[in-house]
Length: 274
Ligand SMILES: O=P(O)(O)OC[C@@H](O)[C@@H](O)c1c[nH]c2ccccc12
Image 1 (spheres, protein in one colour):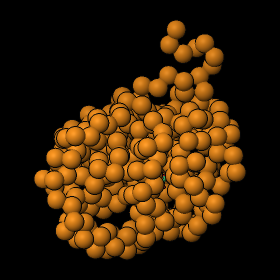
Image 2: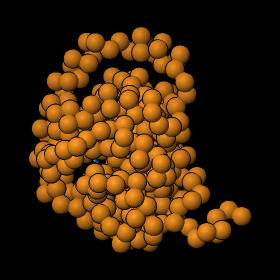
Image 3: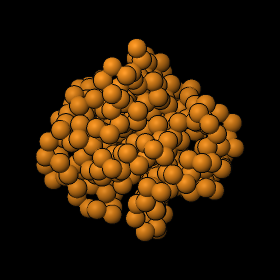
Image 4: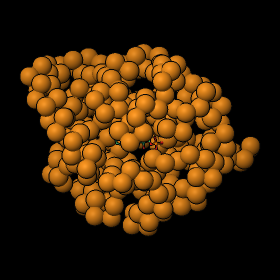
């Protein structure tokens, strides 16, 4: 399974990172940095749409190869911001997604939206690094972490002002995450619609798992959302937000694509918060 390969690579990267990044130094630097922008709040307190949007900056993926050859991360992020995305996700993994930490740092300097560092976190050092490069939130993938790791990493993230998107893709993972104290108070639950073995996406994963969530816990539906009908489907299923990458990356006019895709989630004019 490709996740196993990615984790092998990450372990090597993390070994290097733990030589170069000192946690105590990182803590001193972070203390001088501006506060993070609320990622969770931006998604859950929005007024203009029924479904929040995390728009992803994604050049390539292991399953699709190169997705967007003409790739300018800052220009893409500015288009997302201009089109009214609530948050932006930036792939920083180099080996498998052709991402880079510098994409996140450059985007941080150019847009105001909260940013998710999209990577495969398996070690504390990566959480400090995320904060240092300008992230407001991190992704924790339940499929590659123990319950104890998730628990510990949530605490570390919270102590650094970072929000957390906790990704699950089946019932067992969701139940593990829900049993962790603070997971739903501090984290957002993300359901990945992509089967990690076959790469196939099925939006029914969102509809199936949302039934197991306690009422009021916001769910983010991730992957495989490609049309306004898909937005309608996950919205009707009760998703609070969506994470969309590939669909936007394949459009010439990204801002227009955001408007088209999200149209079914728009609240009727005048109907919001009067
Ligand atoms: O490009 P898509 O199908 O719209 O999916 C976006 C996002 O959900 C996907 O990139 C993703 C979800 N979880 C991940 C974990 C690692 C890397 C990537 C991902």
